[in-house]
Length: 65
Image (tube, rainbow, N blue to C red; front, side, top):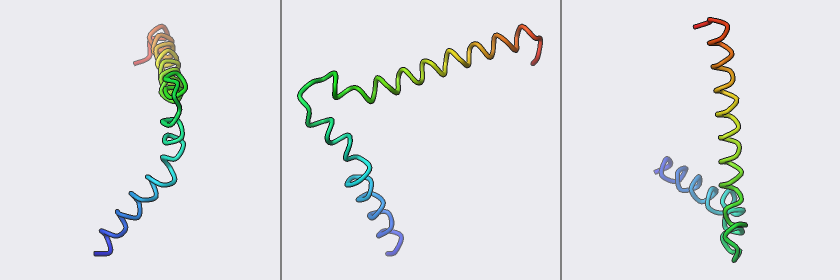
């Protein structure tokens, strides 16, 4: 019973506190503003991928495995 209450408390915390910025963005009428967080994450992922490819190229050129 205690474990069930802990998971319910975690779920309620996520819905009421952590997801509040997303709920505020969802209430906006502009699609571009609603998708801002997704575009930021896509840009960060793309930048990290390019960095990773550069590091792989550097190691391949040096002959390291």
